[in-house]
Length: 289
Ligand code: ADP
Ligand code: MG
Image 1 (cartoon, rainbow, N blue to C red):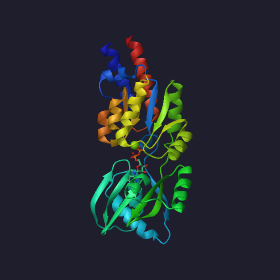
Image 2 (tube, rainbow, N blue to C red; image 1 turned 30 degrees about the vertical axis):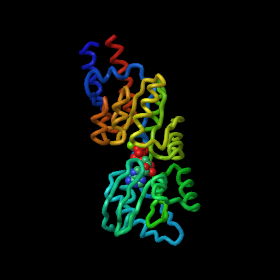
Image 3 (cartoon, rainbow, N blue to C red; image 1 turned 90 degrees about the vertical axis):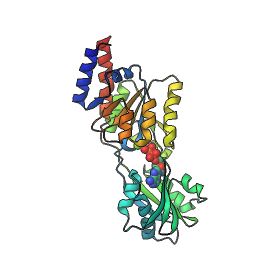
Image 4 (cartoon, rainbow, N blue to C red; image 1 turned 135 degrees about the vertical axis):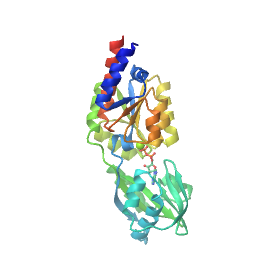
């Protein structure tokens, strides 16, 4: 590899909005055939808004928002921000815990409460009553994310939040596919939401309900199957997978640990630049050879 060609590539990258960790990072792209895309914050904006409150029978809507909003106030998760923003007032929280990829729990105004995936509420022995399960399924069918709220031995409500696909994501996926890459959508969210987002941007292959700690295993598995894998992500959750991938692309709008774990940073958080990055490295490598 001639250092000059790599330096020229690095300079061209900077113009396109791609920060390259070291000249050798460009060489990581050779032979990449699969690109794993994190959903929240990468393919979608990651900015969520509360779209629905479905209280269980006899439960007060304002109380649901107060309890859930108080708990979520302590979390940085996009879902948490949407719920906290919609809460009318806040109660004191003790013993707050964030259960990665599942939700949050703590004691709100003396009541032990939980907000998150039904799998987390199951750990508390709480099951969704039929009408709430239906509200959840209907929301997911529309591509929204539904989380459950529970306290005092019962599921109290389902809250729905929606994220929006970035306007540039579909074009980005088309460009990546045009470069001969196979796109895979990876998320901790549920399969219905994942499929809806996938369909919206043109990704048929989705891997959903993956715990943060297991994202790295998905990358390893694809590598074991003989693929050279690029991974694009933004979250704290994605750092290990970005480091494991043959080429890690971090969204510049994302968490610092993700940026540190990536080989390349897409400065503006525009997924189309991932395609530019791969094209640039291929060209740079051709110049070298
Ligand atoms: P992604 O992989 O798409 O970036 P995460 O791994 O961060 O998503 O979260 C996976 C799922 O865990 C969310 O879709 C949500 O159901 C649940 N969850 C995570 N954090 C929270 C939270 N603070 N409040 C409620 N639910 C949460
Ligand atoms: Mg994410």
